[in-house]
Every structure is written in C-alpha cells, then in structure tokens.
Amino acid sequence: MAKMKAIEAAVRVLEKEGVSVAFGVPGAAINPLYAAMKEHGGIGHILARHVEGASHMAEGYTRAVAGNIGVCIGTSGPAGTDMITGLYSASADSIPILCITGQAPRSRLHKEDFQAVDIASIAKPVTKWATTVLEPAQVPRAFQQAFHLMRSGRPGPVLIDLPIDVQLAEIEFDIDTYEPLAAYKPAASRKQAEKAIAMLNESERPLIVSGGGVINADASELLVELAEILNVPVIPTLMGWGTIPDDHRLMAGMCGLQTSHRYGNATMLASDFVFGIGNRWANRHTGSVDVYTKGRKFIHVDIEPTQIGRVFAPDYGIVSDAKAALEQFVAVAREWKAAGRLKDRSNWVSECQGRKNSIEYLRKTNFDNVPMKPQRVYQCMNRSLDRDTTYVSTIGLSQIAGAQFLHVYKPRNWINCGQAGPLGWTTPAALGVRVADPKRKIVALSGDYDFQFMIEELAVGAQFKLPYVHVLVNNSYLGLIRQAQRAFSIDYCVQLAFDNINMDEGEASRGYGVDHVKVVEGLGCKAIRVHRAEDFAPAMAQAEAWMAEHQTPVVIECILERVTNIAMGTEIDNVVEFEDLATEKADAPSALALLD
Image 1 (tube, rainbow, N blue to C red):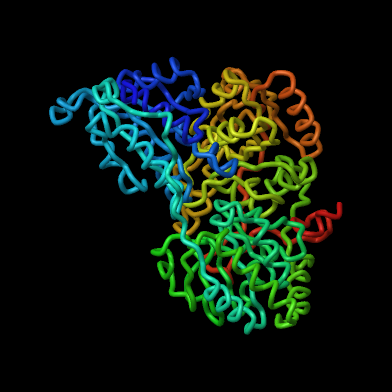
Image 2 (tube, rainbow, N blue to C red):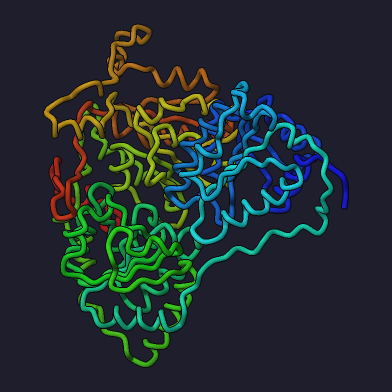
C-alpha cells in the first residue's frame, strides 16, 4: 500500500485500464487531474477547442479500433453540460467513452457555488452510470467500476464527477496488484443456436440483418463465415455497414427509409425470414413495423435483454454478445452443411444478386451539371478513393446520399453517429479516429451546416498534426430540413446563402455565403474549392500531397447546386426517387461500379 492523492490513483488506474490519451479542456476544478497526468506522464492529451468537441473526439477514438475506450475531460459546470451531447451520442450507438468532470468542493455543492451543477443527475439518462464521488478512498474503485460497466453487456458511456477536494485528498492504494475487472457478456447456448439455425433452414427466402453489435463485438469475419456457410444474403444496418464487403456476392444492400439501396429494400420486401444479429430495428431502417414485418418471421439476437421485443416481438429472441452467438451459429451451421441438412439457396441468392446488378434498381450519378449535383460528387469519391478508405460522417443529406452511393468494405471503415446525429460531430470525430490510427486513410463527409457547427476543431488538427481529408459538399442550405419542409409547403429559415462582400465579384461561389476556404486557412489547415467533377480527382491528389507535407487536415469544398432532393420516403415500399434512375454503367453505386 502507498499513500497518494486520490487523483493520482485515478490516473494510475486509467493507465492500468489501457488509457494512453485523453481529449479535453483544462479548468480550475479539474486541474488536479491535469497535474497528475503531467507528473505521471503516461497519458497524452489532445486540447480541444470546445468541450463537446472533446466528447466527439473520444467517440471517434473508440469507434475506430476494437477495444478502445475514449476519455474526455472537462471542468465543472458548463464543461460537463457541453459533453452531454457526446454522452447521448455514445449511449445511443452503444459506444463506451469515459467522461471525467471536475466539481466544486463537497462543502459547497448545496450552496449554488460558481459552476457547481449536479452533472451526475443531468447525465444519468444518457449514460450507463453517472456518479459524483464523495469519498476520496472510493475514487480508484469508481474508475474500476466505470471500465467494468463500459465493457459489460451493451457497451455505453460513463461519467465520473470529482469534487476538487476529493481529488486532492490523500488515500492509501496499492496500484501494483490492481487488475481490471472481467467484463460480463451473455452468451448464446448450443440449444439456442440449433433452434435458430433450424428456424432459418425452414424458410425459403431468408436474410441476415447485421447490426452495429457485430462490429462492437469484433465479429465481422464470423458474420461473413456464417452467411457463406448458409449461403444467405446479408443486409447490414447503417451501423453495421462494413461487416460484409460491399462487393461480396452475399451483400444484398441496405434497407431503410433514407440510408438505403433500392435493391436492398426490394430484397427485404421479397424475403420471408430475417435473422437479426446485433441490431436495434431502428425506425429509419424499418419504417413502420407493419410493413417491415408483414409476411416474414424474425429472430433477434442482442446483448441487451430489454432490446428483445422493444420495437416488435420476434418469433425467437436470444440474449447474447454477437461474437459469442456467431461462434455457436457457425459451429452448428458447419455441422449441418457437412451432414447435407442445409437447403440450397442458390436461386434466392441469384435473385438478390440480380437486383443488385440491375440498372433498374440503381440511382443515377453521372450528372454533368455545374454547379454539381451531389450524386456526381459521390461517384467521384468512389473513383478516387480505394477500398481501405475510412469514412466519417454524421447527419444530413450529405450523409444520407453518402450511404446510398459510397462503398464500404471493412468493419470500422464507416464511422457514423447513427441515432443521435448531432451537427458538428464529423470534424472532432474524424480527429479522434486519426489519433486512434495514425496511418489510416480518413475521409470525412459534411454538408456546410454540419461543417460550420464545430469548425473550430480544425485548429486541433493543425496544432497536433492530425491530417485527414474533409469533403465538404456545399449547397448553402439546411438541405435535409429544407426537403422535410416540403410537407408543409415552406422553405423557411433554412437558407445559408448570402452575398459575401469579402469574396471577389468573379468568384462563382460568392453567393454561397461563408468563405470556407479562408476560414479553414485561418485555422491553420489547407483547403481547395471544386466546381466541376473533372477537378475532384486532382483536388484529392493535391490534398494527399498537402497532408504529407504539412500534416494538417485538408478540406475539399465541392460547390453544389442549391436544391437537390435525395431519395427517401415514409415506408420501405414507398421511397420517392426524386432524380432519374441509372441509365448507364457509370451510374452504378453497387456491384457494377466495382467493374470500372
């Protein structure tokens, strides 16, 4: 046993739990933690420009690499409330991050002290656990419990709030014998696996729906192996995109109201059995339950017991970690295949492949308009970027169209804030991804409004040498809200355009308002503005050269036509196609495009 300050014990526990970097903003009530980190020297720190930005950096860090847990730090009062959005985003998508806040002294918590707020109560609905530690001797065990909870069951965030006098108090603690607590993860049984495979085998047109839980469990290879043994097509959810490569013969497209493929929706509607693994049946994936479930049976596998039956009652539910379940499913499926018990799915697979490769089910991308249509930008991205590219995006028409037209080939190569969708998430999340993986090819995707929300975080990329490419599609509109306002016959307070007096009269984007190139350059990064499709590939090459030379983020701003409606609808059988459908191979966003 050794005497040490409680906050020093916390830092040592963080190291034992695998933390090597944190994202945050110092302040008076959390300075003891910063002093302990500096003195001990084992945890690096990235200084955010906004505390919400720090929370999203922590999210990006966690989402990028299996096993990571991002840590964000802020002082008392508004620092904690600023990080609530990050905690909500992480909670909604089952992402573990640890938020640490400073707090006023214990004796002043009930006296409306400066920046004293009950952050634990505020954070409770969007965390697995939120606590204000009132006894110094409990500090190291609070951190141990935090990591145990974040790793057990359905992953999620935790907030630990530390009064400054608690941080500074001396305690006795033996760090040398400290060990992380073993995580609890429920596991499917052999009997459950046998029943699930038997139910699937009785169907004629089955599908596997692969959710974000498969990625969280690092089980994508097992998912693909199961699909190949059974010869059953896979429909990934938006959070599960990348569990099976886009060009795999069993990848049947995504289903949903917005981030979906026409062939994915058609295949879902043609199916008679759905085997959901690690997914939530989110409403943007299903639309109304009546349409989604009509004429088909369901199995639902989820790590969280209360998820089974939350949206609709499946025909069979299994509470299990996705990896543990898939190991059992694969073992049973192998035995059944060896014994000749599995149905021949060749005709069903051929039917699904036919939709995926048919011009009839593809959306047009090969527009030559100037200003550009967004569809053409995604075609340019597909042709300029390789299969190892990691995309980072959050919300809006840019993200919806990106999911309809881009390609993802690996797990954790589509890093997306799925359920919460806060504007501004993309830039800090991309920086967190870069910290997690210094060598990965990262391309962020934003509309102009998302980009403007937390644009100041680009300075973090410049200061800490965190290069990535940010494709900014600029139509100077709140595009998704404008499109939604059509239902009310209005176009109100969603226009971002104005005549920027500081841009040259001859500048083609003068009427688009904010001069993003100048703002980006003012934050210490590089930027290129693109008006024509033929200029995109050279811009990407220039961006890569600048990143290599300067080690800063590079923004490629693509000037779009002001109004483009992106395909979406109210039901998976009622998606409105606002633009022409594909007319040639160059348009194809699916298997045909991979032949170019």
